Length: 154
Image (cartoon, rainbow, N blue to C red; front, side):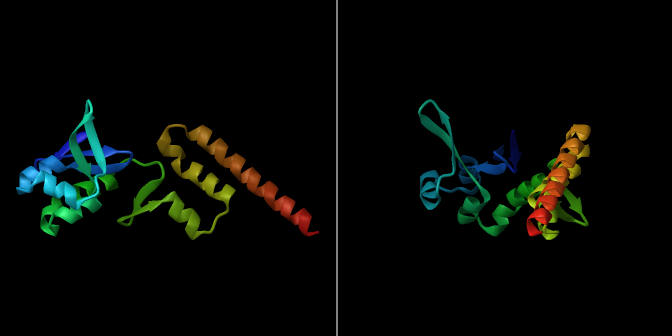
């Protein structure tokens, strides 16, 4: 998906947002070649065997832009990340919380954590009944492990 932020092309690849280095150089009057030398190239778009553009992530952008120049792009990345649908995360009291955060905070075991993950996402993924059945299976495994551990202790 390609979008534009203040004339700069941004795209999302594998869950990360990247910005067009050509557009950044053009907007801020930077030399494309000199700028390329300042950063580690992250993502190329090829046409045939020649790169048509280089896309850079936020970390790389911070090497070539001032904080003020970077702010609109960062805000765009942040707003997009916060608003993306996620089966595993929700906004709670202004903070993004993921299932992983909850299962770690409560120090859940492997099976309990898997069960919680299926329960939390069930309503949002569109496979509620299947996810709840999977959650039950993981809870049953957790109980079986408890029973096995109790027998071994005796």
